[in-house]
Length: 456
Ligand code: SAH
Ligand code: F3S
Image 1 (cartoon, rainbow, N blue to C red):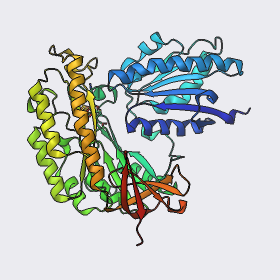
Image 2 (cartoon, protein in one colour; image 1 turned 60 degrees about the horizontal axis):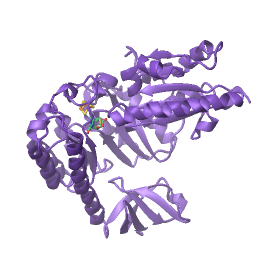
Image 3 (cartoon, helix red, strand yellow; image 1 turned 30 degrees about the horizontal axis):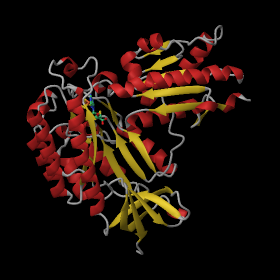
Image 4 (cartoon, rainbow, N blue to C red; image 1 turned 135 degrees about the vertical axis):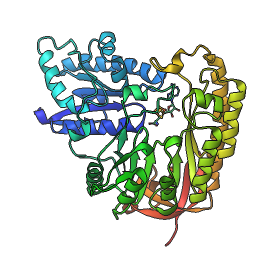
């Protein structure tokens, strides 16, 4: 085997930002002779790109590390040594603790130091020369002054016609339940010229839909390419939509506090901007919203929804909701249910509150008992599921645009997405992949929709 055939297996947990980061780490390793693999059995390097947002997400890392160790042990029989790295927000939050609990780990890197991965690998290889059974135990979780984006190579590979583009990272909002400000650091926007360069690269690779990513994407701002004016996310979206190859633009995730008039206007005038908005509300109770430090009320949120609907009548809303935040009473929970009834979400992510070490809410004494959280989550999810079904039903019989992404499971079938991210299955030629076509929706099957191409 030559040096060129080393393989890296990267497992991503959590948010889309982690998926993006995993791809970029894979790209950085291509230069070092690593190919990406989906099969951990054939890997020389296993990277767990972790999520710390809720307790369950971080605990999973240690059980997966146990599995990685088995791969290492088996690899000696095959005449190789598997390297194990932990990256992402658990790495940032726990740092050296990971090496203490799992001493076989070679590398621990926080989200802002991925560009050091290739050199850390070289170091780790030297450290383990004497005793390959031991982990190298290298930890690097500083927040360096330089930006990783300046050091990562350009994108080499994309998975299809829809791609993520990271424009903003970190968060200063300090919601009292959230670890992101501690693990991802302060708000940072990438320079606009770099973003445009990356978009052009994606276009060359065949991308037709770009989702702009940020922990707080609507906080994005930056100097215009000619250096004369401060641009907002809306300005960036308008600029990106000038590329004829780009058919669709999305952005995620927004904070209700940062939604300025210009992004509402962008939904009115920019036809490439999809009529879909992920706008986490977290709770419908003003008392809880205050304790969460969200800095809006439920009526502020409803007003915002109304403004978007006025600008873009076919817009649909997705959201995130937490039940059982400390001190949440039955009445507070009912307020959340009422807000959901009013908005009617097309999709929602709902969670039981999970105390995160180091966050203010974790030390509040009035924690809600687990069984109460379970009951609330059950009722909440029943309502949200019904809303999703109603929303999906509401497009049956309508003609909507679909960007085709891949072949379907059945012969002759292709699958694309509606503006609302619903998977749409039609009978059609593979040549349509990468194109946006009008489709008449004929039926709903579970969370998928069936349709037929409309002759234009
Ligand atoms: N703006 C961010 C939100 C990050 S966390 C982004 O999407 O990148 C994603 C969601 O996880 C939050 O909106 C919140 O609903 C949930 N969440 C965060 N911390 C949590 C906690 N401690 N317990 C339960 N859910 C939490
Ligand atoms: Fe977390 Fe609140 Fe920021 S949820 S990512 S602190 S907006």
